[in-house]
Length: 177
Image (tube, rainbow, N blue to C red; front, side, top):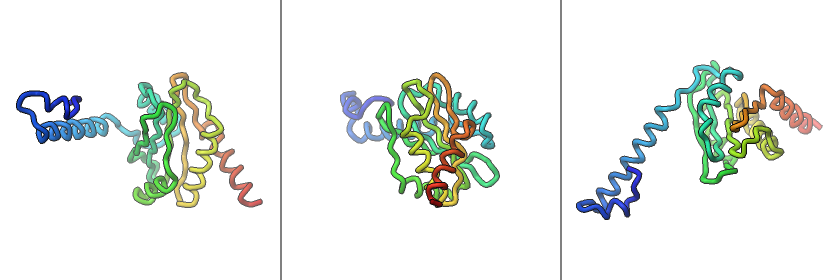
């Protein structure tokens, strides 16, 4: 199932249509396995969510950004992943995030992203991105519950560290000035 269509066509009796069929089947199986493996936490609770994050991301080798959706009762009901082939960056356009908020009709989100470098501390860009996402959430009636950074050396929670509140306060203070 991992073979490319060109490789499959070299096998006697396998033409383009069979090779395409096998490739589609492979993608469908992989999508099923990916969705099946992730058992989401029943509720978002900051401390226990870190245990979930550790278990889910400990084998990550590239930068990943995942958004977890939380309903009005605090239940985690869906994950949407934003990944690229890049080791050290994931870019998501603001309109894509807003579109996802509106489509999901979510009450809250939790962001999780990985730092493959091993440094769990947020960068200035992480802080700026978190604050920009807070603004998007605020203007769309969505609560940014946490932003967790996972690295092989540990995790950083914007919520548990107080940084999430600090960024929100800083932004709102500037808006009122």
